[in-house]
Amino acid sequence: MNRIAHSERPESDRLVSEPGFRPGDAKPAARSATTQALRVLVVSDAIPERNGVGTYYRDLERHLAPRVQRIELLCPPSTDESRGWFSLPMPGDRTQRLHGPPFRRARAAIRDVRPHAVVVATPGPFGMLGMKMARRHGLRLVVGFHTHFEKLAELYWSRGFRRAAHRYLERKHRHLFEAADAVLVNSDEMAGIATRTGAANVILVGTPIAPTFLEPCASADPTAPLRRVLFAGRLAPEKNVAAVLELARARPDLEVCIAGDGPLRSTVEREASTCGNVRCLGWVPRRDMRELVDSCDVFVLPSSVESFGTAAFEAMARARAVLVSARCGILDWPELESAIHVVSEGESLADAVTRIERLDPNERMTRATRAREAAVAFAERNTEQWIEILAPCRNAMP
Image (cartoon, rainbow, N blue to C red):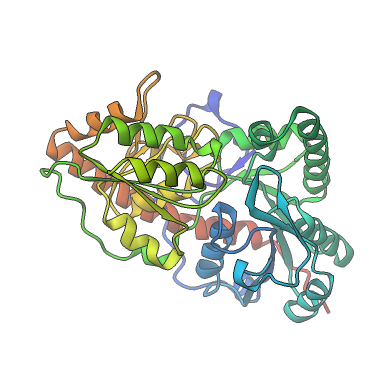
């Protein structure tokens, strides 16, 4: 695996074969002639900003747009615009839908954008069509592997359906990986899965962040008692929402805000109706997330399956105390891990929050400041990583 990022891991514990951009390297003063002419088409089955993958590529678009000639997203329409589209609800979660491939839009995008590279973000109908377009036109193909769908299938689907889904997803991922010039992952665990599934060139990349989260902010007062805890993400089994509800019951003095949508939303709403310190906010538009994060003292992400944890990363950028489970891929990045609080083995989420509360105020302030600095630097480096990965594109379409 090629790691185009800094790592403090010992050589024996790395899957690194090529160095690249590292912390402390000077950022380019201006885009090069290569990237200035670069045109990129991103193809994704995820609605922009609706889930982690959709958020990743919308934010990436914002950061790359000033650095390349053109970048466009080809993805399903927003929920409000999807009427008339062929779509099916995902098994186990009717808030997520799989849309039919947009053949006409895809052909128009190829003609209009004339991309040098196609980035495929998902293994669904959109993503597979993106792979075929890249092959047909001889374009560089970069595949983003962000979600371990096979692991999620174990949580949602019956045994028979799970087997069929696993075979389907493995076959689709293998097709994508074998066709790709590069497969991008954001954790060591996902790198191992990609390699075992046939990816030859696996690169560990960072995560972008919406520019609004990078604006100046103030840390929470470290001398004040904790008052508000925030969870933001899909309300689904893999996010371990039950642990957040247990925290609310164990700490009635805390206001526990839960933002998101998903198959467990009714469970959260029932809890909010009987537990006075639980607030079920539903799905929160991205434009309102920064203000919500700024209003909390601690952000929690106790997921049992989490390839990275973008919401936690955003909270770091706002100088909040961030508490995650050991299963979150964000901990694979040493420069971020050092500023994150982690739920210990056998420790409840409530006990972990109490542990943060009892820290010396100076330590709490130092950790929050370090989180902010690490997240901002990490986001900046991610743009350079993507430029470095896409820069080899030379074969413009006629």
